[in-house]
Length: 171
Image 1 (cartoon, rainbow, N blue to C red):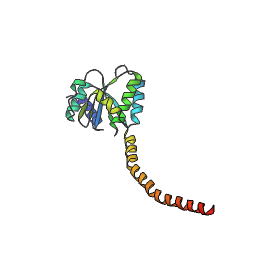
Image 2: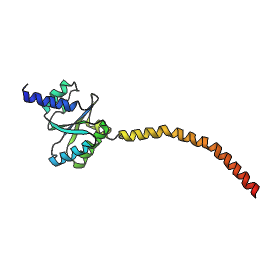
Image 3: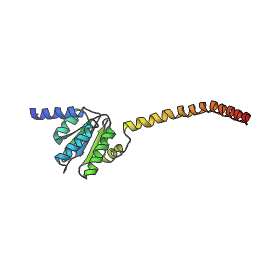
Image 4: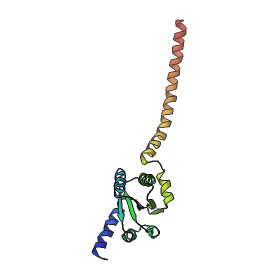
């Protein structure tokens, strides 16, 4: 392999190592300005958008033992990698492509499992990691809160009885 191609393969390998997932996207008809806007949105998720040659991606994916991607390596291909929230990144990509009515997610690979475009769509509809944490915290604190209301109810009831007795004696 020529030195230039070897350099490109190593560069794509480095991108693929940045996270446990990679999304392949068709970026056809998307302007440079729109790609810049998408990159800004992905940066908020600590993710990156890179245009790659299919042949280079094929070699890099095989070197990293990713699932076979040959079926989706047709036409213009970009990869989205990075960040720690695959569903949040999928949400950004999906909303961008839906808003612009251009481009599409070809496939996703999360933890060495291939996800179709429909499965990536379902992944994008999951709550974000922060939302899941908040829901879990709410579930964990609810029993404690209710137990405190029960414990608080006994002294409160006693105070109500004593107050009623005082009110009765004063009348």
